[in-house]
Image (cartoon, helix red, strand yellow):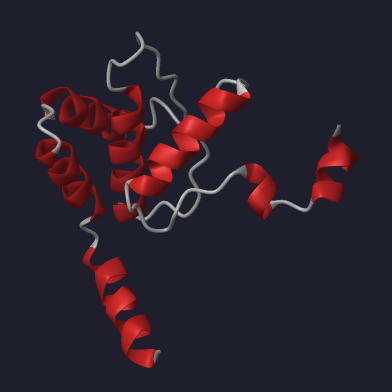
Length: 126
């Protein structure tokens, strides 16, 4: 058990999540130049304090989710502790996106808000 924990700590310290995600997309025979461009521009906006949040909009099957996965990986590699994605309120689309984030192997893994919040806390603010 300690050996596995040390291996995971070493992987986390390498900060190569973004490169792994780009490699995963390339292995699926998809182009990554638009993803890299969007990720780099997003990080430039954060660094220059021009933006703290983003809206990702596009046609179905245009690569929005892959870009969000890669952006999330880059933000984690850059030291961001908490990243929140607000998605369409369609239960089917929410689950589809959550599944894709989880299948990406991104670490730490994506979680639905209901997995991390106390259900009673949600009712106090509603």
